[in-house]
Length: 267
Image (tube, rainbow, N blue to C red; front, side, top):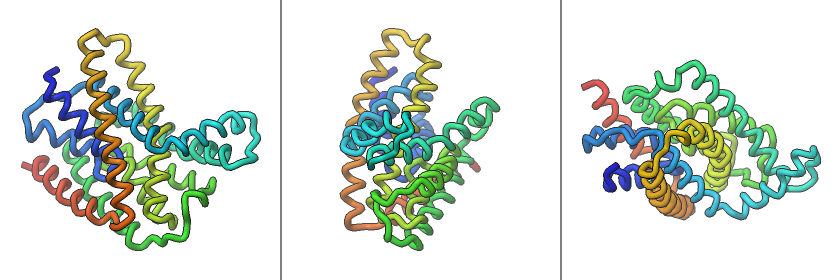
């Protein structure tokens, strides 16, 4: 795979994976603008591994707490904040795993991957994010995360299976609607992405591992590294920006991107 193509895919995926702007929309737009071919599943898995590493590093304190609490959850002993966080993350991830398996087994996931679907999802769910951000209060923090809110946000995350919705965007939307402050909504959305990306990456990785050759493995490693640094930079940018501004700039960008994608789809 040409190195420039590999770097472009990694940068696009890394930057847009955690910003509420739809990574799938950008990956569809990329070949339309450049004429490049689809990068394939090997690179998809690699860049997801890279972005996973970035979010784990950025939120290492929370990740460590959840990891320490996981053994207690397994034993059914929810007696501290670490175990509570781990339990909330587990419950928030179950809906998207179940829905994702259903889509994969029925083949509907492939049917949804069209420029038209991505364009409409990018546009519509961008407007939904604007509505939730404008009408949502800010009376809750990440420390107030309850089992009910975790399950509710998990159900919102199911919508991310529609390409163009944006995983981070829709979970942030759900959190803002529930009354979480902007930074806390983004923080919870990022933490929810870790088990979700891990589950989807494991599934895809199992499919491609047996067919990967040395050249593909080298490309995958390069893609993962570039995606890691791109995602880390995007996370740092978004979390700092949210101290001063709302999600409106991302909404405006989504509307513009959705219009471009729908123009491509219908012409």
